[in-house]
Image (cartoon, rainbow, N blue to C red):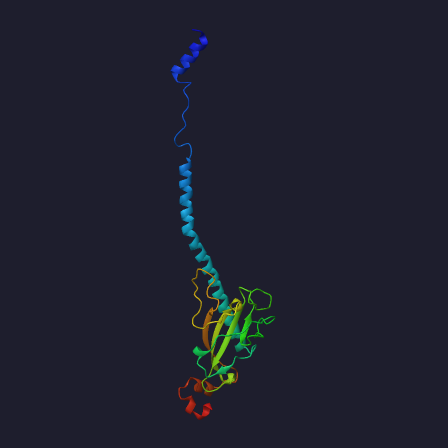
Length: 226
């Protein structure tokens, strides 16, 4: 036997030329990869609706905040005389109808709209208009109640409803039944008010007698309240 075959034989016997085996932990099989993909997909399917609800609720909460700011702005403008008072009557506030008609509020930021004329425009996107295609413009409805007089200078109870401008995006009537929920999985009920509130209003000429007559149950029989 020559030296070369003997050298190869010795190497084989010593194990130096044994084929190397790959570790069982060296990588992932196709089945393991597919299982991982399935697990991740199931997790995403479960989490995605929760994320959508969280985003929608955050957007809706922002709308309610803007609606509250619009209501405060409207009330402040009434109290400082920058805005004409709304119509005052003895109709119960709960029976006051929602605004209706087509929306025309171009250039009316901080003032009453051309149509419906009872709505006050609060521009939310900086174009000085309140339009039905805006997601941030707010429209404020004010309704006054005074059981013994329709003269706003004698004071009245003010009902404020704040609607989204995009409530006028179609011809479906607006509602007054309840305010929009902050927690929502979509864009919310566009036809319902974002905010409703009531407050007592008076002017520089409102007297103590006016207050007494308005708050008294017997004002109809009081000669001073005529």
